[in-house]
Length: 404
Ligand code: HEC
Ligand code: HEC
Image 1 (cartoon, protein in one colour):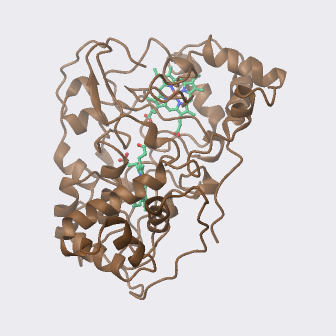
Image 2: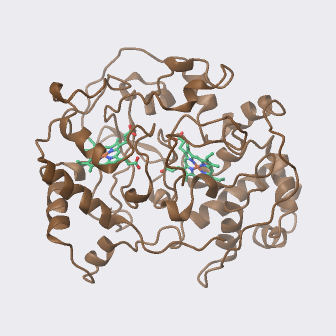
């Protein structure tokens, strides 16, 4: 939640630039350098042959740019070798997150490589404001990724394609070459100009902007959950769900960060205020990133994810991650930046007793800046925990695009 935090100055800026350089699905500038450096060394034996796009539908409301963005989002030819699309880690039917529930982080296009963080949902991400520091609230707000390192979704979309732990393209030129052989090439020129491919850098920007336009459509952000029907007066919560909502807004304190009131900027109920907090999540020993070669993970099993603090190189932000929306949370397991929890119930149990010694939770991954004010000892009964979980199940959308 947005709150005043004491400034801790224990400096553990543990090789932040190196960690950043291998962070999954990175932001823009450093991306290209690292990916280029790594090119050639990691590609698997798979074939370079172009793969067909899945069968996609164009919604009647789409602009050309949104339709172009949709095709790019689902195109597995923007990876090297062809094989991984945005949708592979952000599948609609998985709440726009990774459909593989058995791994805390996502497998890259190159066999054996994994990112260091859990794939978040792409749905509702575009409502996050551009990353900024809110002086009145003394908190960073917005941006994309768990640590806010991309300013917005257009900026974000340029990262994963060139990330060696994700889509693994060699450089912007190779991506644009792949775009030029796509079935949407004429549409790309129609939207961005006949000469768009003359400047690789601008064409690459345009690609990111196209994907971002798709991510802003009502196809991705459908607001079609039971709870949306309740807000529209078209459905009612069961007694259990109603108790869960009251706890969410009251005793369980969830709405302090996962805001249930309409966002003043957009008028939408997003279940996040896009601020940053350290929830005290333990290290996840199952994170396959720990096993990667030193080239990708120099710290090996001692890797510590500093989140926003690592990104800003500010110890006062260490361990903080962006508050995720809880829309579609029933579909997006595992949970938290490192996929530590596999069920929503365990997340709520953790918030409930994290600071109760007899509960026996492992130490937080980053001990500084843990929020002890709004979580850790909520005194919820088992039945109340079930109530909160039942309410969270009302946030699952009912409309997802068909992809065959
Ligand atoms: C190999 C899996 C993988 C692929 C492929 C992938 N992503 Fe991601 N995506 C992730 C992970 C992991 C994160 C979080 C990384 C982080 O925070 O450091 C992420 C974060 C995001 C976010 C930020 C969401 C938020 O709430 O902060 C967006 C938006 C996104 N991805 C869109 C895309 C787009 C667009 C593509 C294709 C161009 C793509 N992703 C390809 C795994 C993937
Ligand atoms: C102080 C702010 C705060 C409060 C209060 C809070 N959360 Fe969170 N929540 C976060 C942050 C930050 C994360 C991400 C933490 C991380 O990944 O390390 C998170 C993550 C989650 C996730 C995982 C979502 C995902 O996609 O991985 C769930 C589920 C969740 N919270 C539910 C709740 C519930 C239910 C409550 C009330 C019992 C609650 N939260 C209270 C800040 C908060």
